[in-house]
Image (cartoon, rainbow, N blue to C red; front, side, top):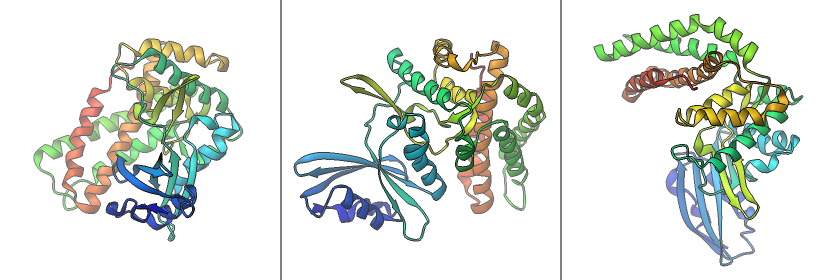
Length: 346
């Protein structure tokens, strides 16, 4: 019996807790052992938790993640099909169990706990950054033009130029809807909305030129992690050296390798980006891809970054219309500052 298992995450009021508790019982062989729940830690609000147990006198920890159905399938395919297909199955957390809420509204995943060895991009250790780049480049090399890419695109996302165009159009549509009688804006909020619209109209006009650049210079299509922020990269010390893993594959999809490269490089200081780019180029050399000139490369990297920022605009617009949420309109000013902060990556 595991004391406290029947109360796991009870204060969170999440769906599917009975199903999650059932999977944890099976995972720890709870009917045949003695143990207790010792702590619960929120890793990402309303989404990811670390659970610590003491089982037969030994500490055991797992990470549990709440997902909607498409994300759950995407993450399961990463762990059980896509990465193993290119001998990278050991480079994501082991999926220990799956618990679907009985009505099908959500799914819990139970993962091994890789600890808190996220990548430091403020004061980066070169060895850890190189280990991360080696894994990213290996993913891109092995999946370049791979026959599984159509399935990866269908179950994941298309991160090519359509991601840019669709998000710009969706953001414009959402902003144009933010006016009376749908939403009441004060003069300052109207000014922010109008400035964002003008910026997006310009970016939409630039779409054909950017599409040409991505097609000609963006490199081969490959499987992308899609969200290479430092908290999604674990460089875990082992007796055999650093073991790098990528977690949180919710945004995975198919597109040019410059999409992932853009996310990764923009998280570092301008000082560190050139040597990271050089190291990445050496690691993907077998693909025959060479970074274009600085101007063209910056256009490719900026295009991916702008795609992500435009996507961030879509959701507060929907929230402002559906719920009249004050935070949603206020968020527009913050996202405008993000656009203004975009600089040449190299």
